[in-house]
Length: 384
Image (cartoon, rainbow, N blue to C red; front, side):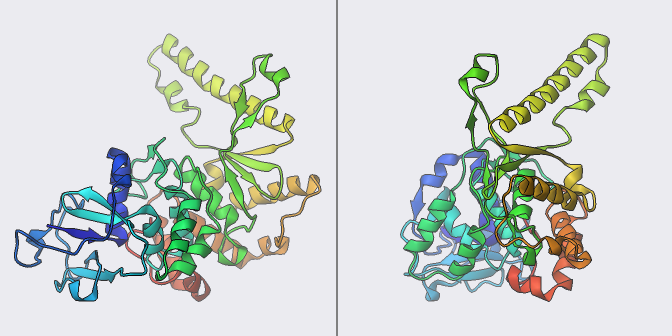
């Protein structure tokens, strides 16, 4: 059997491949002609459900997205939804993931998701593909996250790919989304924060412009010889001003380990570990400030609590203003709009790992015609 799948099926498999077999990303091929052999025709029984990470066969109501090189090769089965990628595609735009299955390369997959994902979620996917974390294949919103893995692609590679394709549906929208993506995100929450900061005000973001993620800054020798680390890495920095953010989630100081310690010795060790992180964070921010960079701490409550991220952005703008810098094109008055604030909050909540996220995503999709036009179509069942 040979079959190329795309859409959410391709994204699910790519997330799995990044966790278990990074070498597969380099097995580049052209999209294969579909072949059900040894079966004579395409039925759900011909599909390798395990390789496709499917717990149940696809149906007419929940079809499998497949790719064919020529219109005449379309699968006539009711469970298949066909995409034709022909001569306009760059050679080697697919990956052989084994078991007769191929998926789009990370570069093509980003373009392929145009119209399948809401525009902000497409941007968020860009951070994942160009970052060193991977969401759970089966449950991308609430499942386990893989950290410290090789980036699937980069902004430069996606741009190069787009330029090499002579015809590719969604190409211009992919360029537009890519303008708000940065390389080297280390975590999903960092990516959500960066997405909200960079997205235009008219789309529900804060419009703070380009950001840089996890850039290493060298400490001066006079600090290194006095015991400071050789370098520090802030999570997010604004390109427009020497202001940035460090995100510390709920587990950063591991206070639960302190509470769960069974005896005095274990409790002392847990307190020492939490205190060590706290002190290092303070010193990190202080050292970065000595380098001329003002880094604001961000906690999970700043993302989950209503109006908290708005307050953080106002504080950020005060810092930028104090440095005598302006964010190009930013309209402070837009932050005062109650309607815009509500849309921003709903957009933020729709991308966070909690059970209500999908409800906010669907409500946001239903209410706003302007956002629907930007997001490029209907909301899929799995929006991440």
